[in-house]
Structure formats: C-alpha cells, structure tokens
Length: 420
Image 1: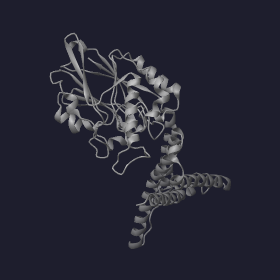
Image 2 (image 1 turned 120 degrees about the horizontal axis):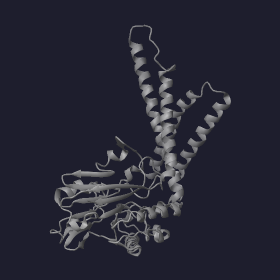
Image 3 (image 1 turned 135 degrees about the horizontal axis):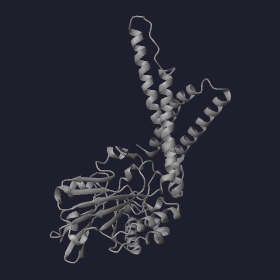
C-alpha cells in the first residue's frame, strides 16, 4: 500500500472517530445554553480539524527538519487526542451495543412494559456517554501533566546479596543509567541537575546501558560538557542500544541493500563520543576488576534483542571469552529480552544483568501493591528488579525520554545498586 493511501485511510479514520465522539459531546451539552453549546462545538471541531489537517499534510512538509522539541510535543498532543477519543469511543460503543441488544429483544419479544435503567438519575446511555468522555479527558489530561515530569529524576536504591561475591568487593556501589536519548533534551539546567544527582550517589562504578542518542551522533554535541561530568573511581562503562546505530533515520545515501556510508560514519562518530566523554564503550568484550587477590568481571555487548524487529548485533560468547574462572560477573545488555532468551539458558554464571530499553513506556502506575504499564504486554521484564534462581536482572526506566516528551507514573531513573 502506497504512503498516500495510508495517509488517506488514517485521515478517514480520524474523521469518523471525530464524528462518533461528537455525538457524546453534543448529548452532554444538549440542555446547556446556546452560548455554551456554541463554544463547546467550536472548540471541539477547531481542534479536530487542525489534527486531521496536520496528518493530511505530513507527507508534504519537511517533518524531519522540525526542531526535535516541537516534533515531540506536536506528535504527543496529536496521538494523545486520538487515543483519548478512542478510549471514549469504547464506552460509546458499549452503549450502542447495549441499545442494539435491547432493541432486538423488544422487537422479537411479546409487548410489555420495560423499566428504564438509570444510574444516579441518569439514563444508562447518558451515564456511559459521560463516563467515556471523562475517561478520555482524564487520559489526555494525564498526558499533558506528564510533560512536567520528563526531568523529574528519581533515585531507586536496591541492595543485592550474592554468596559468590568476593569479600574485597562487598559494599561496592554501582550506579546504572540508561536511555539518555540526548536528541530529546531541551532543558540544560534540568539535565545538569540529573547529572549532579548521579555523582551525588558516590558510586564506585557507573554503568550506562545504551541509547545515548535518538539517531545521530551530532545530537550529543551540546551535551558533551554535561555528561563528561559523570565520574566514578572505577570508571564509567557503556554499551550501545538499538537507537545508537541510526537504523531509524532516513539516511540520504541508503542503498537498496540497506548499506549507508553516512550511517556507518555516524556509528564511528558515536563511538568517538563515548571515548571523548571518558566512557569505556564495551563492544562485545569484558574487563576484569581486581582488589587484592579478588576479581569480578564486567561484560558489555552490543544491542541484542529476542524480538525480530530489533537487531542482534551483540555477541555474548565473544564477550565472555577468558573469564570462566572469575567468580562474579555483571553483564550490560540494553534489551531485557536478552536475559530470558540467551543469558539465563546459556550463561548461568552471569550473576547480574543490567538493561534498559523499555522506558516503562513512560506511562503507568507504580504504587505500593500495584505496578502496571502497557509495557508489560510487550516485555516480560519491563522495569525494576527480577530474579530467577540465583540470577538477577535489573531493568532501568531510563534517564531520558523518546517520542512522548513526558512521563506519567514511570519517572526517569538513576539506579543505585549496593552489593552486600
């Protein structure tokens, strides 16, 4: 199907959705004054027509040249409105189905008086219509509120105990950060505050588990002096995430076979960025730390995902070479699906795996007794600590943000891990 056909179908769907939801809006203000009705109708259709027009014009405007911040907000508001209307439409559809069933029963049943169901003085239809609009409006309001949380960094502290941790490394503190996505940042002071929070943890070792940029290495240019401030006595080590390879950017010289010299140069540039930051980028390799006679190993691999739409650049077997006799091992692997797919089945002596990638979808609920996000329907391990047997996995919720310029419930994270 041609891109133009896809755009036309999306526009037609949005128009149909707007008309459908408008029936509930009109019913809600039907008894209001003419002035209230006119303001409500005008506001609804001005916003709806603007969204439809934007989608219709996207193939003809240079979307990729827009500032990242503008693109993020426009796209977030557009998608938020559509999703909010879809949620409202679910309730409206339930009411339509209910009324259809009632009509069929009345049509084919013997005539008799049927009681009108009501909830708190409202008819069943009025109740469902209002509930749908409230649900959709609440979701959209939450998404708008989430804009204020994108730099609201939170420190998550955990203590992990391992029987095979060498005595010299007991009490060692690791700070994990992940998914910086520097191309999305627009507030320098806020990011500096986050970097200060990282350094305030007084970590022995800082580990970054991938996605430094959204697509291109140049996104880090104005942030080099910020992230080069991240320091630790044992060093700062890093890996690559799926976005770091530039696979999602429309490189002008992309060949039919997928090769792009510009994309290759971009990756080499990004490797140099890690080095210039003072970070040791681990490309399917390991390093051994020694205190007295005790040793632990750190492994870092390129992106490896169990999902077919993401690449498998990583080579854990290569990264593992030469450390069989090291008693304690930590692995940095960007995508948490790697843990169940390869790490646990084939490398049972990797004690702790650190990942990121999911961002917790930047949307969810985390309160005592309840942990939920749409991410859990895609990823088995999507945020926080997981344990199977003697092996642990920690999935960082991400330092930055991507796509939606905000966070609802799932806040940006700095992880502090104390080995005890």
